[in-house]
Amino acid sequence: MWIRFNLSCDGTTQKRLHKIFRQEIKDWENRKMIIGAVLTYHFGNPTRDPETLYLCLDVPAVQTPRERNLQLSDEIISQIPSEIMDKIIQICSQKQVRLAIMDYEFDIATACERAIMTGQKYYNDAPTEEVLRFASIGTKIALNLLDDIENRKITFINDMELADVVLSRLKKELGDNYVWLREAFHFVCNPMLLNDYYLWNLAVS
Image 1 (tube, rainbow, N blue to C red):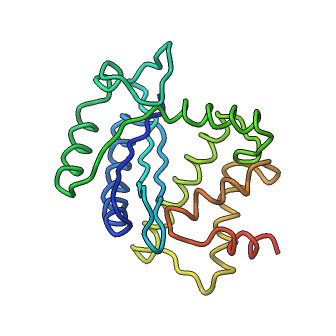
Image 2: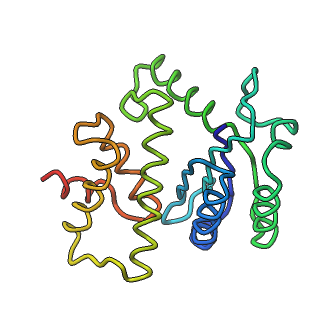
């Protein structure tokens, strides 16, 4: 089940937490406790409220409830592996971060339905399962790139080269003609604090 941990804090704290949870995600994946992750910033410049880092995890040990609600019940939360919950609670306590635990998949599905009813577009009409797919793949590419950059395994001469690498990695994972490449591109850029509008235009120019 996809679970979203809302970590409410300012942008500076989000950046610190982002680096911490990048490492935790790798550990949890290696230990088979999660099978996918989405890690996205939500803060403004200047500051705006609410500001929240989204840590979204696909946790196979948690059973999807029959009745879905945005806020997860204590019964569902109790199914999350203690290694994950204890670490998140510990970090939130140390950094004085407010924590809320949500049903990520239900939130996306509800947003999709609301967009259809109001004649709007939510991630270009992508169904819930595709939003989860391209969001997690985009995040995986972003975290791998950040590791490669920090370990100096890869460098970029200019923004055009960076944009080309992001798009080529997405196409490798999703296919050249994947309908929601543009939306997936956002989920690579957000964790890297890149301007996805600018880079996308470079990539497709």
